[in-house]
Image 1 (tube, rainbow, N blue to C red):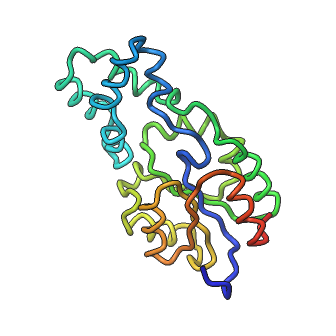
Image 2 (image 1 turned 180 degrees about the horizontal axis):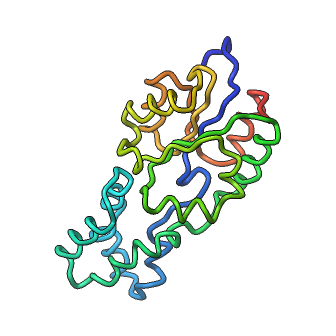
Length: 206
């Protein structure tokens, strides 16, 4: 990161940065047998299957395909859509307060999230106390562009109207960090709130 250009804008990822995301959090309520639960999470409703929603596919389509492969789990697959919010067991500790403090310091806040278009609305509506601080949020499933593809960062830079050299992008995945840096953004690999808080203080944002 160049010390010559001050950072004045923050762009967050959402999943596992602002809010925890765990498919297990839903299905451990629905599958009592531990061995079956582990098999189901590894072979049926997997992150890779869900990432199709982030890319813009509908749950109706993906669940129909998955049910055809695993008809014995039709009911459990069907539960994923209407109960998606249960895969988000809570906020990442310390992050809600940090967002509020940045907003109080008049730091422009944005987000780029790999997230299903159809799941985003109900999810965000319940969490307006955090997302109300954001000037704009780019949702991959709406745009049919996903991180770490360059196109999603380029779209965000244009839409947000920001100078990428003055923005810090925060994400928990190294590939997404590398994609952001390749598009001219500064970036921070998220580990926990304490390390990020120290980063913000060093940048005089907190």
